[in-house]
Image (cartoon, rainbow, N blue to C red):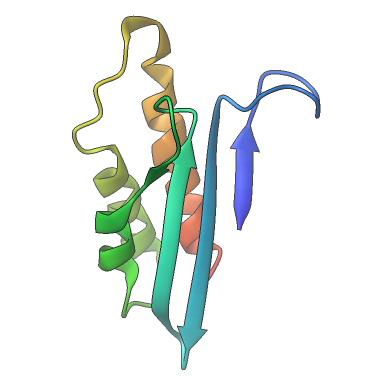
Length: 99
């Protein structure tokens, strides 16, 4: 799963993006890899979110919890605090994509 939010057309840099890979078996997420970009000077892997979703179905309640966990401790600059909500929503959508 990959999704990015950008201001303009296809040749613009992303404001925030999420990349995720999931392995499912019998309706449960066995393994998850989730990272975000555009929120730090480098891509950030969301280890705590990965642990949260493993063993679950990735339903709406887990997706919401994953989004909230993803933004815990976020310290945005004054001019880019809008990225926190974007990151939360992208992580939610990534987790929902496997349910």
